Length: 586
Image (cartoon, rainbow, N blue to C red):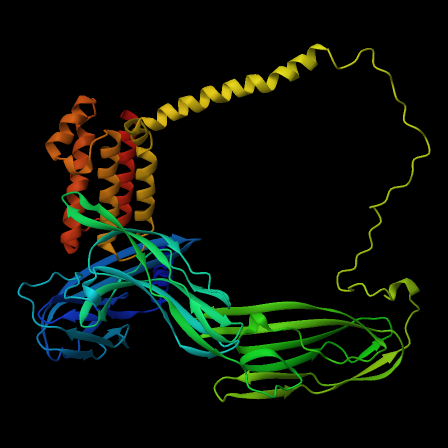
């Protein structure tokens, strides 16, 4: 019995392992300098065999070195094991041009899987000294180290036609912070957010023959609402430059970036416009749905009109269907399922009408006509739904009060029976008090309360001002809070493969905590000096040694990540415990 149960559990466990989707990817810088040494990294998330790499034509390649990791997790009784196999090549391009790498292949459970293709551009002249992977080189636009740009997917558009605006910055120096983004007003446009990253991701780009690390700050979808030359103002951004030190990247000055301004030439839609045109620009289709064709008088019919496609869906106004005069028509309920992406705005917009026939008979609802401007063909398109016949039988008589003859909007009419109360016929039983409130003890207590509160407030404000003036004391007081904020940044990277940013965040949290807690400049922090100060504070030697070992591990991991086998979760947990222990004792 036990043997059979073991076999069943093993079978279930193995099926759980095979259930995961297999991914085989390759990544490398999109742009490199001639003679620069860079990495080409292949990653496979399953056990594979017979791994075949492409011919690295024109590239001088060493490797691969392999990296392997695995983890098991049980969620709601289901077991899942994940693997990660990394194959790292070190490559150098000796000639200018584009290098195209074909997909690599591997066999997983007898099935052939392949990676994505990859294109790498080599630019410039061979440098005198080899550049470390990840560092930009060359001279850029106006020899600027950092600059910002705003670009558009198109410089000309019709009224109502979508335009993607991309806000971006470029850098050739290390940055430790990016903040205070001021987005332009986009006057004359209807604006919809497309992309706003929670974390800045840098990618290499070729700018006039120079390599820059570039990052997208924001992408928005713009729909021009008027004709003429519309100006988009510059956006502003603050960046903090960094300089490497023994304890990580340190702030070395702040810069305010101001992007370029840019214009859009907006053209009016051609004349004549169809009668059924209501401003729709793009490519659309229309469907109609009626929930029943046979009904009794005074019962309700749902009549839906759904417009779907790509274009300015959010700006579409309701169609104008023609209903029989014997139908009471309520304002439509509008529902949307719309997504805004770099490809434009797409989805559906549904207008649901509630119809109530008030008399018996046979009625025809004409087809709905909808016109839109097709940008691709630069012409108007008109579509029409089929007509519907509704058969209405005699129904129960309804109170005349239901029929709305006042012109009030009928889609949101509610009967309220509690807003006006009846007049009470019996007078309240009032009682005379024995004394007046004025000149009583409670009167004088309330009279003096504001003055007492005012003096207490003055004392508290003076105390707070004194504490704020003591920068050292405030820095010490907030050390734990600041370090936990830095640890939170590291926690967000636990499930990623970004080792260098993770260890840099842990390093900054540890070093910054003691610098703030002991009120010493970060640049003055030395190992022996830290040990001496911590010993003066009677900190256990084991805590100090654990702190120093973790600092060393973070420094080592940033420059030789393959040699550190500790998981991100263990490193994060250890750092949190050390900071908590020090915070309690300092």
